[in-house]
Length: 323
Image (cartoon, rainbow, N blue to C red; front, top):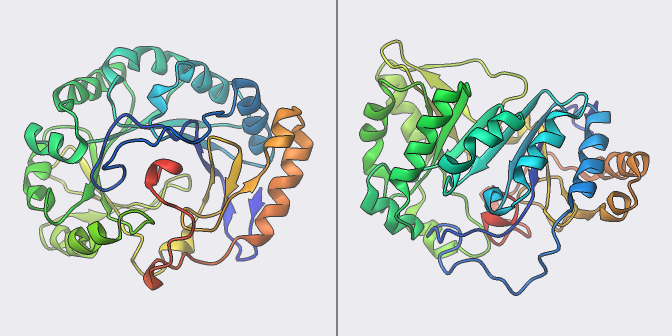
């Protein structure tokens, strides 16, 4: 199993398969996707080598991210190759949901076992203001279809924004009272391109946590393959709630995930410096060489990010690595 010099073990890979995104979220890509850079994303064959190498090193969960992974026409094939790789127990997808309703049946059949969908507001007009698209009703219909198919791990992600959706907390809670869906509030993170927006809109997730605990919500014990969210349940609610709070104390202490960019760079932290290029081994279909390159890179993983010191590394926007 992969481990670092701080005793942390890594069984969870966030695998970006494209950095392109068709939404214009005000906290990430307010001016839209920049098409000027290379779009030579990892091929299906390269991805297969990558997944087999990580599985050999003990990786059990793969989350496919973007940009927007739904833009890749071979997404169904990518889900299938992950699912069919011995050792991979869970294949998850994070998406903005723009084509979820149309494709969820095929993705589920290919082996998708967990789904995270971005929904930064439950009000269609505010959703369009934040994302630049009138897609909310279609996205919610896709989530409903995923429930009908029996996908058990369905989550809706919302980035907390002081000037936009922060006041909608009670609306979200009312929505999950009769729905078996988890809402996850993500604390806005400072990145290279959003410094002014961050100062104007950052909300501490701890404020939400204290509100939940004061109103009968109880914190759950994490599953070993779970991500960084603190999760809560309420006996009177069918749905649950999660908080991702990167500015909280000891956030990095339980880190169990690595990240791969869509162009073959291994990132040890979302807020680290430039990634480590392992694509030559992927192109050569060299599983053992890939394993060795990954293991060597782990020597450089640091104990914690430096967000508290306003050091955001090389991350310009969250679409680069899927957050």
